[in-house]
Length: 555
Ligand SMILES: Cc1ncc(C[n+]2csc(CCOP(=O)(O)OP(=O)(O)O)c2C)c(N)n1
Ligand SMILES: [Mg+2]
Image (cartoon, rainbow, N blue to C red; front, top):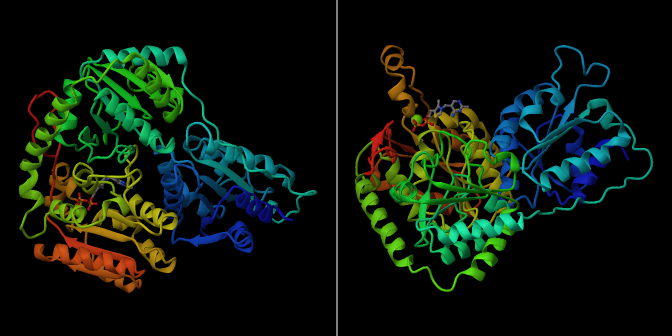
């Protein structure tokens, strides 16, 4: 057995069903021989985004794996690996490297050197006998502790060498670690004593599948819940205790409750300082529960810390709190009423845009129609970078876990398409949607062809406003003088040219029928791109932190 065949066999033993890749890499052929479905993309970055979604949507149970060639393949993959690192997605990346004789010679690209800062681990395997140990370390890394990419680089001349003796490889265990019991007891007391606690849930809740435990804690404490973008859908946003998502743009109750809180309990979150999330207001008691001790006191100073798996942490807290509570907190009614009133007032402010009859179409109207048309429990949706993220995330009400793939630690334009494709790969029964703008499609639009070729019937919602509208306020002179924010294209025609279903929608009355036609087409197995010609909308639901009263403003 040669090294490429051995890698394929090890992937199989690890339960890998799909190998996503771009030629040339001998693992692709070896995987096909081992009956692992190979999925070929049009460029490396998209394949990494797909692998990323495979891992995310299965809470790390099915590991997304991507392989590519040495040199250009590895160079072009950088963005995808960096995005997975930024979002803490546990993928295994298998780059080829230059053959050993020239691997260290200029200007040959080395994955080992270049991926150091965007991976949990990266190693080069120079001996066939070392491949098993390297793969074991890579899979142990993605299945345990902080999820992040692990990388095994194999020089091209090593793949074809024979393994000495038999292959010995067992799938690696996945294990969890729980928080310090003394700290749990202390935090339980803090949470019980809190008068206006808010729970802030991150994507650690998704990886730990701690959804039920989170809900139990919220209901026990009668405490409202918000999430980060990555944590969106960890708590049903239709629940009376849900505030909505704390992205860059946010529903009013998130803002109001965070400001008014006395204790903020962050669970499965990093509290990372990001433009696409909310910094916690000053002067609050912060409890930080996270898997990775490196996140404690990183950006957010905390008063209490719990380090451990989110499910184990929540279960330990539930036991400790139940033992001390002698009855209901008695505040559920007031809390849920305040949330409902705040939400209603906020939605009333936005209703003119959400139901706008204007032409060009308002992106908010499309989101609103989509939200009320799809079967939310059987939908997975993701945004893209730029305005679509901030237009979608506050208004989209996610109902079941992992029905929204949120992101924003880094926001590469074009990431959403790969996420929708990867989600469809592992959840073929779900309606998988990506919502993007005309700048985003410029990056990865060619891979709509991958949707057609690989039979991944996603629903792609495009807001074409012939502009990078989000940049208008900061590129006024360049726009006036040189039209620097203008972009152009007919993307419905592009989708049709690739063999998909494409429709360009200009009339607001056609939004709903077009969405229905699109969903029907996906059910027939055809990927769909609905291109809505939209207004250059720059208003988002953001709030001035210093003001008690929220405001709607452009940016
Ligand atoms: C790879 C990459 N380069 C640059 C950016 C910065 N950026 C964020 S949004 C944006 C323009 C967004 O335009 P579009 O997608 O058309 O949305 P619109 O604001 O027009 O609704 C740019 C340039 C980015 N996020 N990713
Ligand atoms: Mg645009």
